[in-house]
Length: 359
Image 1: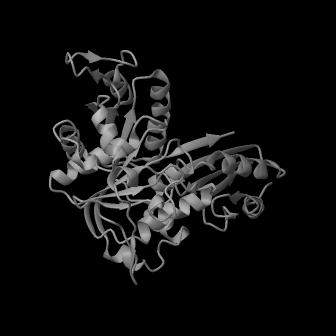
Image 2 (image 1 turned 180 degrees about the horizontal axis):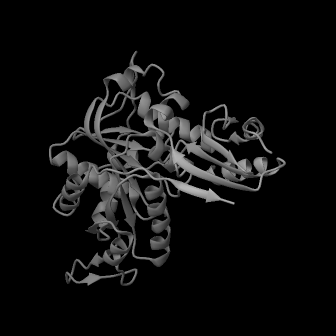
Image 3 (image 1 turned 90 degrees about the horizontal axis):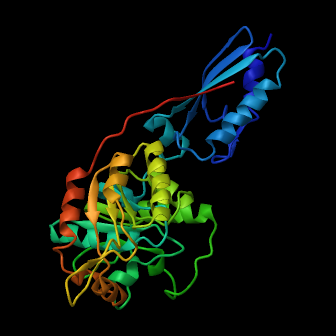
């Protein structure tokens, strides 16, 4: 008959790739029971959307199945409490000076999963509109390898200031605080050729080592995809919600659905869906032309169970102002209704979940 000691010893060989320690040492194995050759336990993850979840479950199952007397295995997946996560990730260590002084009320990520749909543009227009509404706003540019936020806001360039306490993010002419890797490079054309862990650490530092001060909204401009950078933001920052951006193409819609599923798996509220580049208004006739064809973003939002925020046109004026570092000069009547809707929707609550894996 297999014993608890044997099972724990076997599971001690299974590592959490993210932390580099065994799931036993990390205290992830809970409620272990053995009855007549049936092994049951709960694997407590830092997040149910952990990208290494299947690897750990399969590793645990293989380790236990190698023991004599094991007939079946039930593995339940649960999520650690906030206190347990803090202890595991060392977030219970003394906070930096910046973290102690910062008071950020809402953190909202702008996400798509698809590149080229205009996430940075939406982030810039949303920040500008929120600032016009009287809110204190900041932008954390999490697109480390393809940053474009500084180009949109600083026509003459900008640099963060160093202080004994933390980095001070430069402010735009209307008072929006911005932090981006491009503000730290010798040249805006310099390539950032980094692997995932370094990118993730830099994003975390933009949160913990930058003196954001008092902000009503910190907008996070995410890169395309659902990998390291996006996962770091969604898991490490106290998210109020996510705004999804798409464009009128089936391919973009498919990838946005992936992003929506990722956000839901992590348990963060989706504030709504916004379609960019929906149409072009002819300056001579005022006619609307759907250059990329007819789309149905309202149906996609309904299918995904989220609010539809509206459509943005293709506007050469936006391109011109962004290229000149003057995005804040764009008239506010177009985007402010979207910004007001997002302000109304944030924040929202999420609920805990549990999953089961049996064999």
